[in-house]
Image (tube, rainbow, N blue to C red; front, top):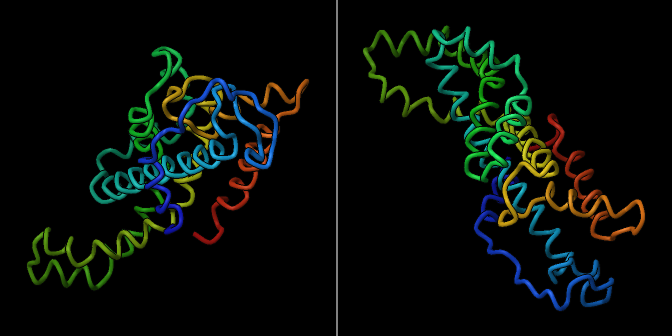
Length: 234
């Protein structure tokens, strides 16, 4: 989990400088993957796009886990609505919304993805928290008249530790949600470079004019899919 959170800082990195007069250069020692049509170093763009996508996924996963914990703790009266939301994959909801609005900004997409992922985390979190609710420790808290804030201060670290085990799943869902929408042209605009946008731009060239940047982006996506699969070390 810690290495994924480190990429949150990538969301603050400024865009690469544009130099259209140096656009479309082939691979050289100075530019190992060449430059794109706007003169940006392709290797640096790939690194920045990957880091931003990872940081975006981490932010969405944190939001999803926070909302999931709140739903698991206090959302029992919403079980029917949560069950209905879990039957609808986030992308099936986001695709028509993004198409109707002409694309979603990075902030709106992040809020929607985090919110839509949280109901899928709620059952596992509720199962973990219920073990605490039925434990002698919880009974002792109630017997001794502990207030809600005091109980939260003592047990919040334990609750977050339970949620952290689900972080890789939420992170991977957010990563591919953003990549899919960006690849379809429905994600954040050009100001938010990402792996999905880079793939959408470069992969069509591979059929006639193999692009090193496109292949490198594809290899990066496949590597991320391998290391981010739930169950690997977080």
